[in-house]
Amino acid sequence: MHIQEVKLSPRLRAIVEALPLYPGIRVLEIGCGPGAAARAVANRIGYGYVLAIDRSAKAIQQATAASVQEIASGRLQFRQLAVENLVLEAGEPLYDLAFAMRVGALDGRYPGIGQLALPRIAKALTLNAKLFIDGGNPLLEIPLDSYR
Image (cartoon, rainbow, N blue to C red):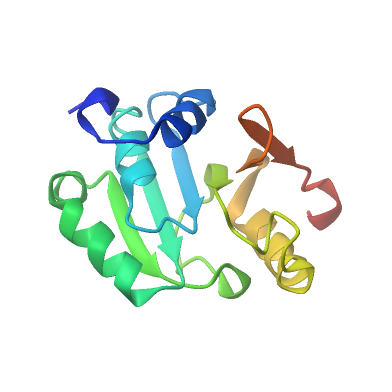
């Protein structure tokens, strides 16, 4: 399955295509909703891995139901988790890239939650990892140096 087989809006497609993905990368999606972008990313990174989180139980249920093939392949996992509570599981390797779309904690709508979330995101990522959000053309990088 390739990105063309995952139904994406033009906006989501532009964002996924702009991410600096490569085979074997570990990706964290924050605020995955029904999981379309996570599935598309999982299908672009070969033997890589995507962890997609969302605070909504309903979103995680929808994402899981729509992602049976990717989950079975071991390339994709969903967790119900608010970004401000993000802590990796014991022994879980760090992630090489994180992205979020329409996540109020990261786009300025909820700066208090963002101040709680950013250190946790930085701690879940490798030292050279980047965090991207929508709002650029099409991506905007959120610097994490001050949180590392």
